[in-house]
Length: 325
Image (cartoon, rainbow, N blue to C red; front, side, top):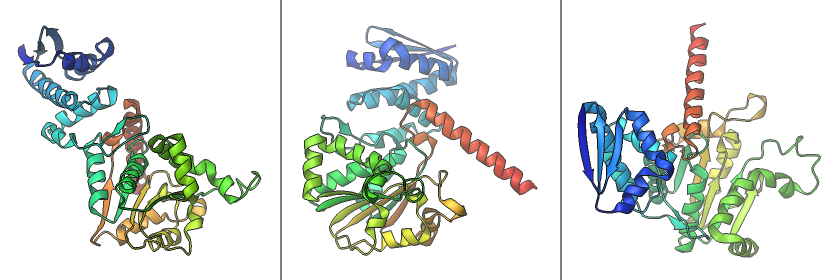
């Protein structure tokens, strides 16, 4: 049995570490098989030697987040534990990055995982960035945040968000309204992100001025988009022709971010995804970056990570059986 003591300078960090009803400490104790108690300004960790050492590294990582003003929750507690178990506890310091932008309600938006940090840095440093990964990894949300940041810094004059509406034909044909109204349900996640960052009045004002444009991918054809931050969401549902059309819209002073999840392709008739194809075609071109997220970058409920991993394991087994036939 081993013990390790960790001293605190700030008692508020002790409260933050433990969380509501000691939920964060319960996660640590369950993951490492240790006992964690607090006495005054000291936290004592007891258990097997390696488990105590690993748990102490996780506590140090959590304290580092608290010292930067982060609030601990189930997601980032599990993330720190995963990073520590993977021998990447020192990399957590890279997450102490600057705020991307502030929402209308005053909430700071920051990268919460190393994958997200690489994504944000890639958007800063490249003209075209592909963000590929499962749902919940912040691909679209962070791209919108970077677009808002670029707009407020006057690096671009407008923000254009688009996504393919793969069911815009038959399935939506009976809905009232023109094409824009028919595809609005597909664009709702983009509206939501912009609404959060600009606020109700700010969002409406910028839409009326034409500074913000949210439109189906079909509306991009024939245009040249100068001094714009363009986001193509759900790009796994583009065809090869649509992807080429979109990328060749890029004009002077513009930046493009293309996001998608290649495990959720909804194209009809077995059509090939333009996102799957384009990352192979453009992989050796300067100023174009591809960032791939995995289940560790999921920033929703921790159970979502487990769901993503379960689907990945199932896909691997299915593919293995298929090749074995």
